[in-house]
Amino acid sequence: MAIFDPVLIPLADHLENPGDSYPLAGTVDAASYTIGDKEFALPHGVSYDVVLTNTGDGVLVTGIVRAEALGVCDLCLDSAHLDIASEIEEYYLFDEPEDPEEFEDGFEVIGPERTLDLAEAISDAVVLDTPFVVLCKPDCAGLCPVCGCNLNRESCDCADRAAEERAKSDANPFAALKDLKFDE
Image (cartoon, rainbow, N blue to C red):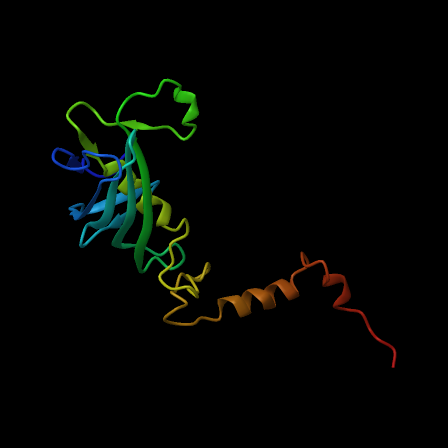
């Protein structure tokens, strides 16, 4: 399922013979995309630089997709900057195959109007290069679970106080040892 509007590429006057290639570059003017409950802004859209090659029975599309995405850090809730750079490789058939099961990953058929829609291939490339865990920086310290301060910008003593309280607590498995006297 494509997350972007159609990117229609007319093949008329291009790729008439097997082995013919057609280089193509452009930008998908998308403002944002969503994966699950995460939304990412695309301030400059998504650029693509691909080569379409007539293989005789279809068109092979290979190239790269690039985007700058802005999201929210999963640990500290600050803004996170992502550089998306993903390879694209998609195969489109001229005609419906006699044995569809031979294409286990599925296939797309180029219709009689001889137009390709690259939206799904571009969407897949962007989604695959978007990290599952979004971080503002690799060593993000996150938020303090007690007071909520951003540990990247300020410090608190909540962790030290919690450790002291655990050490004093009777729920601590070592609490029975606190009154232990060692003979000298």
